[in-house]
Figure 1: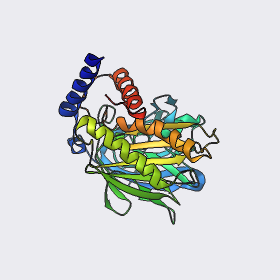
Figure 2: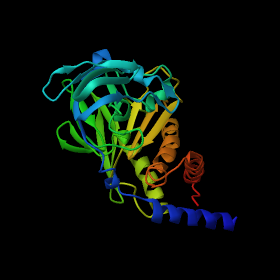
Figure 3: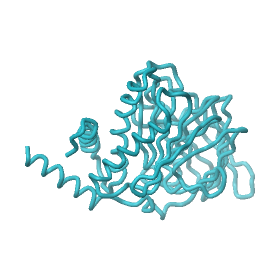
Figure 4: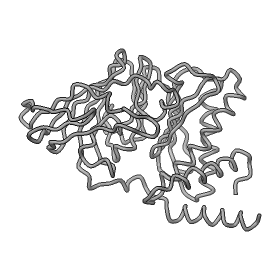
Length: 329
């Protein structure tokens, strides 16, 4: 048993000392895209206007994890040249377009009705009349080489009255963000969002939530702080200077004990059912928080190439269990 614990400690130290990277190490060589996203909550859709270096082939993400058919949501795709003249577009397949000459500007709509399968709602963009989660990976074109690496972008949001947008991305001006990696960017939007913050070991961490929960926002933040501190003690460093937990109800009707979560870069998106008991609800919250927060370090803070999902998930499940039951290795 002592040998197992020693190995675990050595592995933790190796990951902490060799693998952790700053978020500033994003792909700086990629070409930048500019986009304005107009929210239409009543119609569960957005309109995207943008510009980029001229291109004649355009495509959109069609599948992510277990979700397929994402490209079918792209509608009314239109291209323009640098003078603003419309260019003929040919639709090759859902989410795939080309044009006889390069285009510098684009405009299209995206239908963002919540997924039919509730568990998919933490993994893709959706929008309803109350709130939404927007993930740029399935909203913006892949034309600039994002199939293999992240590109940077300047993204602006046009919001309905009283709506707000929150993200761990750099906010240059109100509702305008400097995005370092489009593949990893997540935004919470809504009319009645609440945001609160804590500082843990140099990391400014925000809770963005909506709706009524059996626990107070303060209690959720306290849990987040404890988990971040415990992981910081394991690795010896924080994975980023800023992070977010987006905690929303499901956009579909689900049982009170259900939850779904995903971590992209320094943002954890968590959708939960609503248990009436504070003790039960906090216990329910602790399960995805301990698991997903570990992903802030593994794999999101690592510079490994190749398919290591078997290691990421197995190691994360093990460490999350150690943390939850009070005997971290």
